[in-house]
Image (tube, rainbow, N blue to C red; front, side):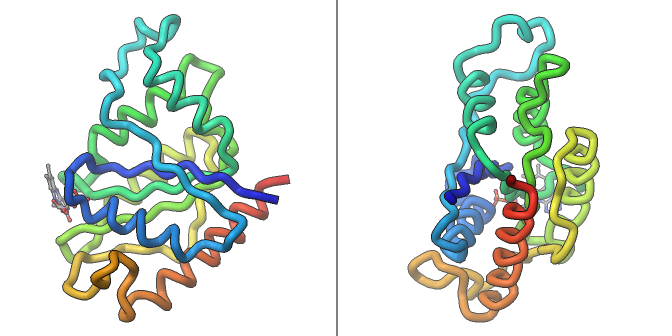
Length: 182
Ligand code: FNR
C-alpha cells in the first residue's frame, strides 16, 4: 500500500534550513511513501470565534491532514520553543472541540538550527503538544541537527557526513508509520 505523509515545516523563511532538511530527507524514504508540505503561512491567527465558519485555508489544512497516513514535523527553535506559525497550525487543525484532525496520525519530529542544541527544546515542547493531541510520536532516534557546512550537497541532498544517521532516522520513521496504519 501507499503512505501519504503530511509535512509541516515550522519556518516561512525563503532559505529555511528546515525546509531544506524536509526536502532532502523525504528523498531517503521508501518508494511506497509520498510527501506533501502543508501550507501554514497563510492561515489566519486562530480565533475560537471562527470555529463555526473556518476559512478555506483552514479547511484545506484539515482535509490534507485527514487524508494522510502520517505526519512529519520539521521545525526551527524560536526562543527555546516552537515558532508561532507552527503553534497556530497545530491549534487550527485541533478544533472545533472533538474534531481534532491530528489525532491518531503517527508522527516524526526533526529540526535544525544554527545553535548547538539543534532545536532540542523546541522538539520537547512540540512532543508535549503532540501527546495532548493524541499523536503517537516516534521517540527514537532523536534528531537534533546543527546547520553546518556540508550538511547538504550541491544538489540539496543530505551530505555524506549525516547520510547514514538520517537514513537510519527515516527507516525508523517509516517503520513507525507502518506499525500504526492498519
Ligand atoms: C532563533 N534562532 C534560535 N536558534 C536556536 O537554536 N534556539 C533558539 O531558541 C533560537 N531562537 C530564535 C528566535 C527567533 C525569533 C529567530 C528568528 C531565530 C536561530 C534559528 O536557529 C535560525 O534562525 C534558523 O535558521 C531558523 O530556521 P530556518 O528558518 O532556517 O528553518
